[in-house]
Amino acid sequence: MQATIALLPGDGIGPEVVAEGVEVLKAVAERYGHSFSFSEGLIGGCAIDAHGTALPEATVEICQAADAVLLGAVGGPKWDDPKAKVRPEQGLLGIRKTLGLYANLRPVAVTPALASRSPLRPDLVEGVDMLVVRELTGGIYFGEKTSFYIRPDEEQAVDTCVYTTSEIERVVRRACELARGRRGKVTSVDKANVLETSRLWRRVASRVVAEEFPDIQLEHILVDACAMHLLRRPADFDVIVTENMFGDILTDEASMLAGSLGLLPSASLGKGKAGLYEPIHGSAPDIAGKGVANPLATILSVALLLRYSLGLNAEAEAVEKAVYATIDAGILTGDLAPAGQARSTKEVGAAVLERLG
Ligand SMILES: NC(=O)c1ccc[n+]([C@@H]2O[C@H](COP(=O)([O-])OP(=O)(O)OC[C@H]3O[C@@H](n4cnc5c(N)ncnc54)[C@H](O)[C@@H]3O)[C@@H](O)[C@H]2O)c1
Ligand SMILES: CC(C)[C@H](C(=O)O)[C@@H](O)C(=O)O
Ligand SMILES: [Mg+2]
Image 1: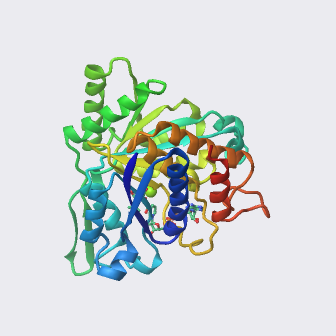
Image 2: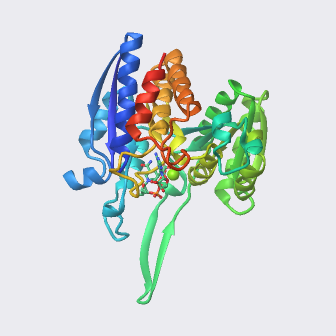
Image 3: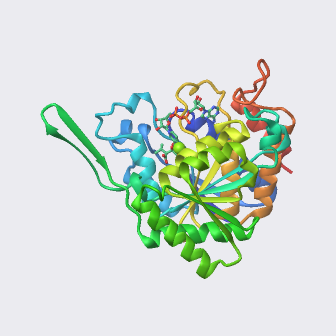
């Protein structure tokens, strides 16, 4: 097949891990007879430096013209001034919103080789296979924000959390559809004991499942309890569906089940087939430029890109198998390797390519 893939490497370790993802895409194209063409755009801090905005119009156009987008990460200390008018993160939020990518899929799987490296007990994390579906274009991230002085010595800041019925319906539906291809269980996470948006979320989730997905087993959990259950009984979860900010926080926590933030991929999907694929981690300024970042979250994001946007299921599985074979072989970057045995970003990327069937 022919496909155009937009590359947005971004900042920090973004370009380092995206480079490995591109190698995998090129290898897949060659080995399976596809033709992928690449277009590249600026996003985040590098775009601010070049154009004064985190999301230049040219980047939006490149993404809109592509079948899928592969993104690295944005942000870093250089652009972190809290008073700055433009911030790298605006680019990321902007492209998600502009492309209408309301469902962010974040799978977490723990293989035996990973279980032995998790900071949690292996018997607790072995067999974990969950999919977090994070609402991505609503909630407190996108509500009205203000900041002003209510007195000369007292400043006030306001972030508004907004959800509508249809925003909740579509992401719950997406979670239920995905659960049908898995173990048929959906856990909806909210804070309905405190937040009005969460009470709406819970009502809508219950109705959608009752009316449209009677075969799905639905449970509701409060977000604070969910944070605890993720560590106490992680293997019980199948699909988790939750609002934007809760999903952001819970997935960084869930990454520790597998042992590293550097392992978790994501797919952001909207109405059509086009999607945006990115590791869930950030630009990791503490290790940027050293060639030591874990590229596996990005390579697993490439697998999701092949599956969800290009419909290349066999190729997606081959990439995932190659990643897990690399992990099983103990070829790991410093976030997972025992002391003294860490391999570089490029070495891990090359090991995946070698194992690609
Ligand atoms: N999707 C994104 O672009 C995204 C996501 C999260 C954070 N950020 C931004 O990144 C910047 C840094 O944020 P942070 O430090 O809180 O989070 P981070 O995810 O960048 O890093 C957290 C920790 O995890 C480690 N880490 C992350 N990815 C890794 C990888 N692939 N391999 C090995 N170790 C890895 C880092 O070294 C760091 O110690 C901020 O500007 C933030 O806004 C961007
Ligand atoms: C950088 C930031 C805006 C982003 C988010 O909160 O969505 C990140 O943490 C993520 O998980 O993709
Ligand atoms: Mg995050």
